[in-house]
Length: 148
Image 1 (cartoon, rainbow, N blue to C red):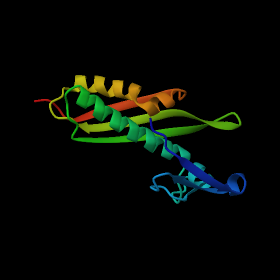
Image 2 (spheres, rainbow, N blue to C red; image 1 turned 30 degrees about the vertical axis):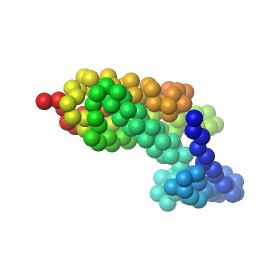
Image 3 (cartoon, rainbow, N blue to C red; image 1 turned 180 degrees about the vertical axis):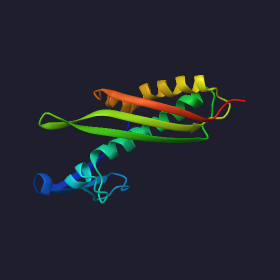
Image 4 (tube, rainbow, N blue to C red; image 1 turned 90 degrees about the vertical axis):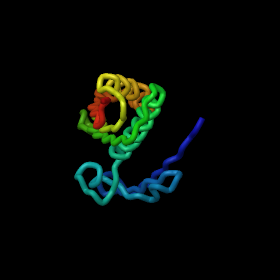
């Protein structure tokens, strides 16, 4: 069993407020975020949705690597992107879609086998399971190297 810690410090109210995100490893330490970086596309800070997307992409990448290995294939390279959509719903907001895009090099595997492994890995990924309340989680998986 493993447990990781993330923390946030917030000051101020609403749009005028600002926060700092830190994670246990120190990879993010007092990283800024606020209204502008979340809702106005200000690139000087982070936002919860992109951090969630990074976590989901990282978890899924490991899940597919392990799933390929279990099936007898070695992944040479995996690149995963997660697009997390935050939409207005009533007076608040909701994450209504996460779109995963996978590009992988897996020598010796046929595309049909790869697609099955990729879909199973998406379903088995701990973050996919944790995000089960998101109405739509899609996966577009592309195999860069195919079987001879």
